[in-house]
Image (cartoon, rainbow, N blue to C red; front, side, top):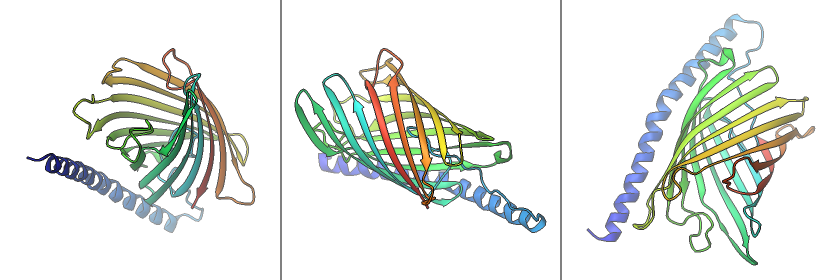
Length: 286
């Protein structure tokens, strides 16, 4: 079998696997969403008050929100990787919710990397993600869900910005709890890589992201965020990093759909992904 044919089969298998997962995962959540909407309609027929609808969580700065949404988001991220290396990235993200329980999200970054006096600019690895949510415990302030994120090879191997050939598969589960003005969300994920070259090891990680958010005022939210990563495969097996951050968000008064955010994050372990990170965010809800 030729190398071209093997590559074609491998891509076909990857696409087929992702399509099968998306269809199988989306159907039950879509049915549950329809049932939930039917229950809402039934309740509205018997109640005079307004029904709040599905539980919705605000978007953290560094962590994802567990509730599907329709939005556009533009981020600027500065990372001081080492004393001689740093990155500046702009990332555009779009998410579309088919219903309260299912959404598709895609993002693409453009990165400028400077190291030891040289600078490289390139598009980085993009991402496409399926997000699912279950509102069965919404009355208790609980939301459970999960999904699959796929890193796509839109990067540049030669410039060491993302990857131009490796796909990253990251299934995850998430949970959210909302009480009064406080929100707590967490994500547990496992990532692996496919479409590697013969001499490349399979880098595998397990990660945990946690965010606590408090609505300080009508337009202001404060955040505390934590992320821990442990390598379970590849050349860095056993390596563990963790970083903690603070953030603040502001809902623009006359433009109700626009939310601005600012966050900073620093490592709290000896091994580290970067020395520090600063993220500026503008988010538009539809």
